[in-house]
Image (tube, rainbow, N blue to C red; front, side, top):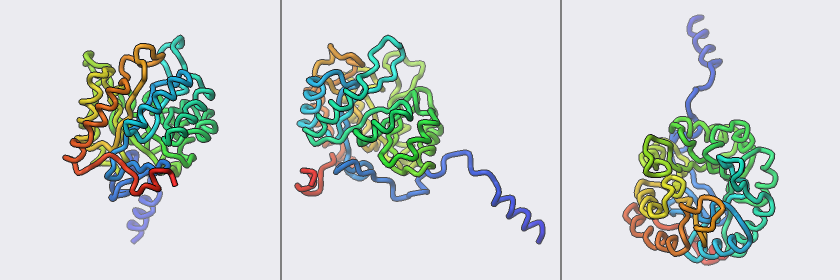
Length: 300
């Protein structure tokens, strides 16, 4: 008897499992559906987030917001704090850019997603944005992840440049462990030996994570390929692979963009994407997200 009690006590005092726990599908077999304003992410409806890599000025932001809203996008994206490889590259407009993005979003009825780089930015970002994005370079910024665990807003975590799926899931585990259950995962391509494209889009990871985790999975084909000619086919492939949505870069004048213009879709190309998505989604028993009733569409 004494040996059994000793064994039971050891099990009770054992350290927690090192691997993911709360993020796994066993923790929520029915899956997680996240509400962002009137938009629902993770259910049968497929959600498209679109906008410029970086907010540059009021005209660019307004034109982009109008174009993506008219094409049927559900969330407006735009960066105001930009983690750039070179310290001499455009770093974003900060709070003035965030106000521009918020005003454009309100005019066109679109909730916002924007990247947060540091915990010190959270009060400002929480005030203006609806989804807080963790960029690939910050996927393992554990202090930021801990801080996001205390926030009660959805958090989208991009996969790191060379992160394994396990590391990606553990990054989400940090936020869930802090008490924030509104987490989305984003596959944005990983760095491999291949140089033909900016990164290698890992669509097998999308299908795998959808089986292993209950969290919604978004795909960013813009950063994954770095080529607007590939964004539409990879978006369609992501939908076929079981993704819950897209994060796409759109710019009215890509050739003039201050950040990642070479990979941005023009409004016309974005319209093409939105036209071609429904048949693929239908084949997967999915559909583009739409409000259940007209009152919901008006934000009532």
